[in-house]
Every structure is written in C-alpha cells, then in structure tokens.
Image (cartoon, rainbow, N blue to C red; front, top):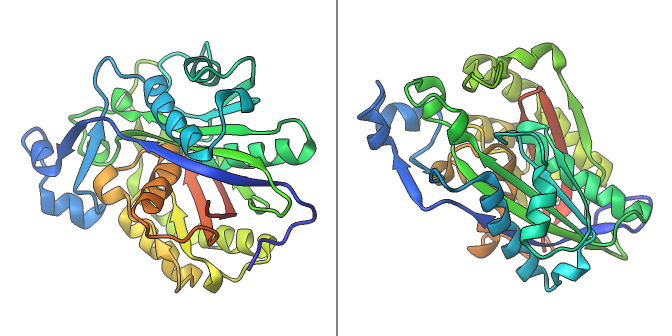
Length: 318
C-alpha cells in the first residue's frame, strides 16, 4: 500500500538519533524528591532518562543526530540545501540553531531556520521539508528535533523532573517519484496555551499534567485518523505508530482509539523520557536500528505539545 497524494514529492531517506551518556534512574530521582520508581512507572511509564552534561548543548545533540542521519542517507553534506531544526529549549534565540548545526556538519550556505512547535515541532518541520521539496524550493533537507529540557526543569519539582529529558533525532528528506510523506493534519488549541509554559527567561517549565492528559487522550486520535485519511491509508495497514513520547498511558490510549491493530507502537519513553521535538525521530530511529519495523512499511507520526500544537502525517519507513 502506498501513500495517496496529488503529485510525486518527497520521502524520508534515513533517520538518526542521539542520547547523552548520563542516565538518571527513577531511584536516583527518589533520593532528591518525594517520588519512587513505582510511582513514576505507574503514572508516566518512565524507567530512566538521559541528561546532557553542562558543556553539551542542544546544538551538540543536533549535530550528533544529524550526522548519523546524513551518513545513513548515503548523501554528503554538499547535497543538503535546507536545514530545519525543531526545538523549544534554546538558551538564547539568536542565532538560530539550524545555521549552527549546518556549519558544524559542513553544509555550505543552506537555507536554515528553526521551528518552535514544542513537542509537535518535528512533525511541523517534516511537513515544511516535504512541501519545500514538492514546491522546488529545496532538493534535500536535513530535519532535526533537538532538546535540552534539563536546563529548563526544576529538579525539585516532582511534576516535571520525572518526565523530561534530553536528546535529538533527525531525518534526511529527499525527492521521490512516488509520495513517501503524506499530507499533514495539523492545528492548535491556543485557548489552552497556559497549561504547558515557561513564563519568562528566569522561570522553569510548568505543566498542568491532568489538563494535558485529558486533552491528549480525547482530542488527538481524530487528528491521527485524519492524517491516515488524507494519505489514503487505513490504520490497519500501518506498520508502525510513532506518537510523541509524552506519557506511556497517553501513547497507549491513542493507539487503542486509532485502531492500528497491526502496527508496532513506539514506547521509547520508557528508556528515553519525554524529549519533546526529539522524541518521534529518536524513537523511530531506534525502532529501525532494532529491526522492529520494515523498510517500505508505513508509519503514522503524531506530535503534540505546548502551544497547544499538534501535527500528524503518514510516512514510508526508509
């Protein structure tokens, strides 16, 4: 089964992922805050998460993931003419991440911009990359989701410290005679923007967990179904379902409602935590490395998070 779209366009050539070396277990967190391994596993499904070192930035993470995706794609840095980085955790907004990542990877004079759609950022960036190729504005695009959430988390706040982590994931997108990236279904709920927020540069990340949980488990499965409809794909045909790794209970709830009974469901949150814009490409890169999903099969991506923003599309697995 192929994705149905009006014209040939773009496909993902390869994925790459990167996690920092430092592992923070639930038991380690329980020594600092009032929590336990059982409490965290029951409520969010996380066993451990990775945290970047003090001298390791989201740019460093992005370069590692982007380099892996580029190597796996078979292209060289000279073949890339657009770089898009999805991130919401830069310490300073100027200069952007994309230009710096491109320079570090030896990509000469590409178009370069960042996308801040928080945890939906990778799906937004992937849609922009696909459309740029289809419109003739780019030939090959490097798309990276990279986050260093640890620098915005209050590690004495149980509501956020147990959830968020650091990491990066990337994809190389190129032209295709047959569509390999379906039309995006995206949107926002700005009336709920205050439920996940950083108020100012002196503040930590704040999240109303129950509000986010209710919204995600009730409002998002129709978005995922719409992405399948726009791609001309029945959910039963999916080989993989890769939603943003926000909370294991959210992931499993959306998967049940979607009815993708034959799909392998990403559960990367267990060992990676919530890495925002990095979570989808990081999870899928690891699924590909482990041989859990077939090359040429169809995967449904679903990003959602602060804003509140959401986006979903069907892609062909490289």
